[in-house]
Amino acid sequence: MNGRPLLAASRITHLYGPTAGCLDVSLEVFPGEILALVGESGSGKTTVLKAISGQLRPSAGQVIYRDGQGRDLDIHGLPEGHRRLLLRTELGFVHQNPSDGLNMAVSAGANIADRLLSGGDRCYGRVRSKALGWLARVEIAQDRLDDRPGHYSGGMLQRLQIARNLVTAPRLVLLDEPTGGLDVSVQARLLDLIRGLAVSLNLAAILVTHDLAVARLLSQRLMVMKGGRVIESGLTDQVLDDPHEPYTQLLVSSTLDA
Image (cartoon, rainbow, N blue to C red; front, side):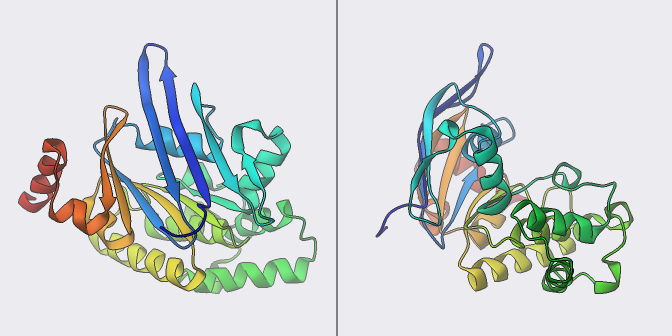
């Protein structure tokens, strides 16, 4: 692709004792692009995602992020406070389990406001207005602003988590199995929402999923992982329509047979 990548990870390796979470993984994601990491459970996808976000320090490798001021930042070389601020402002992370990405003890509005406050916005009226606006964008009734997340359905929780992440206009969003555990109809609605927001906001994203249909719908490029390694990569439609590796062929055939 043309231009400089928004994020470049080089030879990321992480070991859990004698077990490899991921091995020698390199990737780039460009502004406005969605890159999918696919593979079975345990293939290393989420480990890579957490290393990229700075939530997990890899055993080896480097992650460089180009921030809004055009500076190349070594994610794991930043002071802890700077890295956390980056994760709360320019980066977003949507967890598979919404309770990992939300504060279940406070209202929906407070969950959205928390990111704005972390970014330095102290105007109550503006914060509340933005929270209401984002509830509407993710198709949650505005009169649910003061409800706690525990009163939301699974699909609403994921939409709330998306609103919480996008309210600060991040440049890169990391999505970890965002439709996992949801009913098919709820998944479809959520995927339409994510695709629409990605286009309208020109978002860059890295999507972790085991569902090839989700990867095809959302991503432009795809990387297939097995045993912690990337074994095949390319344009999403090309990889899924003409897979070269036997493992990728098995994944595709399993989807067709389902």
